[in-house]
Image 1 (cartoon, rainbow, N blue to C red):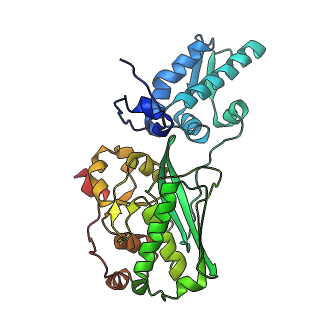
Image 2 (image 1 turned 90 degrees about the vertical axis):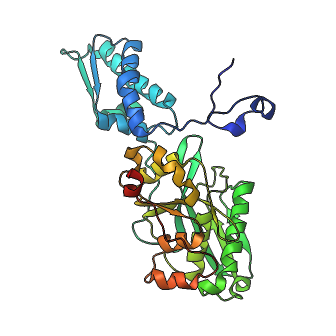
Length: 337
């Protein structure tokens, strides 16, 4: 029997993958990484770097700074390497200066810059105020969940559609499906049918050097398009994930745990998910769900009602008569009970 691990199934050759039984495992949360670091990695690094006679302490806030600011991964391989680097720097100080008399090291946040250099990851910035044509999406990658901004702008033109950001084929198709849906409900949104022949639309996903693919940005693109075309602003404390059909149905997605973790770390307050992903919520650790309001939607009208900065949501929804409106949402209290 052979046991193998991988972060990205697409990189495994097809003939080999066909002979495997695939078991999907979620990445560690920062809290889980913190416990692994305290219980195992630090002790191992102290011994491996010749410091068994020294009491090396790294406080929880400093350890979390290593996890969040210097590593970006689903596992702990890079985290372990960084802890070893810190211990190696301490060992150098012992050899060079003799080390502290009390044989105790208490690593501070200030020392991290000295040992590891400037912080590498600051997280994705979230706008403080509602914006037109800018929506916070949630994506799953080989290193965990990420906040994925979708930007849409419109300019006078002759109906051209441009999609940029190094998007894969599936994500480009999601953009087309999103636009088809928005065009199908133009009358309900108050958009003149001739608007599309007199204006150009540009959809962009930032960090253009990074490849992106998958269908889960569908509802994010619908929201960004609806906002850009109507001029209605989007709440920036909301993030979302879900595939969309050209009839506006919201289909389930994967990687919910990682996506919700990314939302929490970015300071998001409300997460919109597909209705059929409600079954996955009990598996999300409490430390991730805490402080997040989760709303499950079956149709994209519900998504727009939540995400758009509307003065009168009920009146807006009455105009969206194309499909059934689901009134329910799932909050943390509902999950806990």
